[in-house]
Image (cartoon, rainbow, N blue to C red; front, side, top):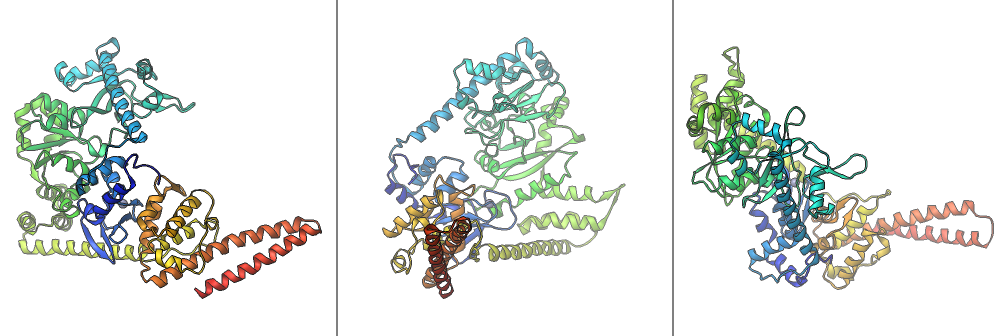
Length: 623
Ligand SMILES: [Zn+2]
């Protein structure tokens, strides 16, 4: 195959796949809520959605998401969810299934590991460069900024702060001098390409620099705050071979060593640093995104209690609320094996940043805010009150609607009832009435979700793709292969056998030729088909994704006879397309040709093609 198992025998890879049932592996990350035939459906772990379009097939041992179109076998799933390479995914699965894995001797693997090491070394060298610059003449304004924010030199040092001078190639030249190649530098998230010649230029210019550490304290990226005027105020390294935004939290390398039970989540680097300096060391920042599921997974390795800090000014923002809904329903999306940290929300008075507040009021006042943090539901209900109050007057219609909706997000009925007491007393109705209404909203939502997911199921899964009689015939060829996968015995009895030239030249034909070979050897299955797609692209998409989708769809054809009939049908359609094109070509030539033996030979060919086309159409009608 495409040789990614580098050094690891194909038979061991097969054993690893065989001993890791995809449904149970995926089940560790996804809660299945629906079954359709041999497919399990759940909410996709790779994109955010409210109705399940992520499917796993136990019979085919593949997964596919009809929403974000990712697919593949169990190894691809692990690569995607753990953000790792092929060999690392193999390692994880080998360990899970207790298969002993020989040491990889693969060149690609070694090269990748070397690249990652070089990138990490370049990041350390960059941090030194920034640090030196902060304490040079160039860094005066940045040092003044730190003084204004009351950051002591020792704190700045502990967090490795630095300064990127306002130059286009300062860092680039420095790292060139240190012997780093453009290949390494282009991967480390510190450079961008110039608009004119596409040459590397410094990404961070005139900025205070914050190294971002992984949990082991190794630098994996940088954030930079502009010094002086300019936009944007903060920029971060893009994702790279060593950095994934969703899977890291700023300051966790420090925070994880504290003995505190709680972990505090704030918005910015400066918040973390100021709090740390004030002795509140259990704070992390979510690196410029709304808190993600993966970040919560990471946190829950170290804590059972998470306190979110919201700026009280933008507390009502829809995005923040959606984030809370996601957190409340986390347990619904994940299996119980995933940990469930309890979450509360703290508010800094007067719309201040935690950073600002702690500087003005000190650590003890701040710790009190943390201790007084609200349960998520209490916070939501308070927000509902604020959202429905105008000129000091509460609008009961808006309030009851918001309050009952927020309550409906909580699946635990005991908790729901506990918190229902507040809106009941505000509205002067019974707790029971509030519970009824919130349950109605929850049911309604569930019904809507169910209808929607049924609709998606019908539309996406059980419909065999239409035979394409237009130009882009590649789809027919792929469907043919998918229909034939696993039909090794029936294939021998097939009336007409496909040949490589039935398939479009290029990748498609390469895959087909190998597939037909496997069919002859009676080892052609959905899994071996997916493997043929490894490292290949079809119509600009990863072949494994395209193939997974079609394998899921062709799954609806179960009856063997019907399956072979469909396969024949697709084969005839493919040939009809090929010979129709051929016929048109011949007709065009004929028009241009002078009378003579060549022309009559072409006429004969045309007739022959016509006869064959007629035969194919008859056949297609039959099947
Ligand atoms: Zn998806």
